[in-house]
Image (cartoon, rainbow, N blue to C red; front, side, top):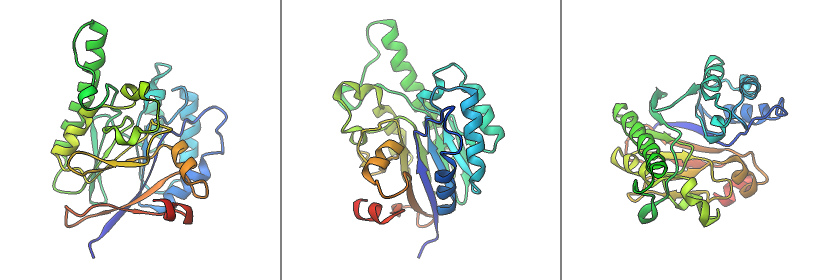
Length: 262
């Protein structure tokens, strides 16, 4: 049997000033269950440095590498650089068009952006503000593509906040689909044959889907996982085979409820 690396993935922590002591047990359990912990954005609630400091203390319970991306909430107060610095100083690797190669797998991370999916994706036409919106989505997709191209011959995980496919936002109001993700993020995921993609952001979305070529995509938003798996902790576990490279990742249940519903 091929050797595997087990990762724990979750997102939408929304750490606030009142979160002291509330996230530590969950994060500790995630770290005890896996060799890596991935956090798919919205680390803080209002993007405040004080919230980041609280989260940094909560993360001290995790004894394995923690790799994360920022989410839209982390930009709310215009302090995203401070949030990134505080968490980085505490040992969390924050990716923004960067890669992390560890335990025999490569992780490429970006926040991503909105814009919609498929034929309904927003096009850069008309008002300047619309063009700027689409330009941001294109820039995030290009950052992801550049990061993926830097990873060597190893299994690849794409870590995002916004979704690259429509399937995992199903359940949200149709009117907000354009603000939950972008098909432009799917293109590099397919091009570089990513083994697994995880995102959050869609609290009422769908647990999983696949890209056009079959890359598995999981929505690991904590509110969604708590609702779908009320008897288990709100994170998901995946075993990533190290060889052969075309083996699909296998999800591992974290509780009996997760086992029956995964």
